[in-house]
Length: 318
Image 1 (tube, rainbow, N blue to C red):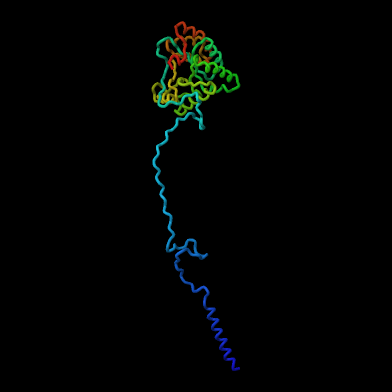
Image 2 (image 1 turned 180 degrees about the vertical axis):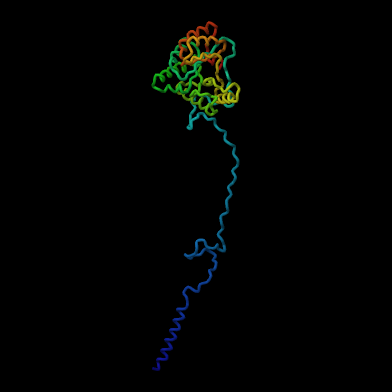
């Protein structure tokens, strides 16, 4: 029993030692975090923690340099109306800027020349017979075709064949026939914008270059003779617009046979054409209802007055 006090003392000492070990925390006491020089490596650190003592330099805001001013490009004149590109045929001259078309209703009134001009649009009947007669009689004349009429040449119909035959005579004989632009759809030009006027002329050029191979410049005949009133603002706009496209001569007339009307008789055509004098421009139609019948007498009367039918090229020296 003498050893028991010593054993009890040893056990007590061991117990005290174990208690001290268990009271010492392995991670230390919780303290306020000290700001560190770098970002926290703790997986629990918030993604948007307080900035560090040495903040990472932020990128300096860049300033876009102000571009140096460049001259505005000069617009290229448009050649067509449609939204897509319309290549200008090589046989058609380029548009001429700042040229006002000249209004011409007659020539200089000297000499003995007279210009027979035939509009070609709409009715096709008798058209082939008229141009054949003019060719066979060696009568010089001028034809103003619409683009829509020329486009009929693509059709395998009676009218399409007739148009091809007319163009074959007119387009292959520039000495005997001058050729002009009568618009595409035959609209009243006084109701059109400049852009619409240009489209009417250029679309006609395109189709006539395809089926005729000749340029109708510089001659333009306004559909219905409408120019918006003499020397009005619209008149000046039309003349400036068509002139800039390349139609430097707007051809009117001083003798109108009104042969397009069903009410006009053969004799009326003859009587009206008899008013022609030196340098007159006579208006007729390849689709006129009695034009073919009246033509021999019309020509005989001109010869009796000493007048000689010529093309506009010859009359105006174009």
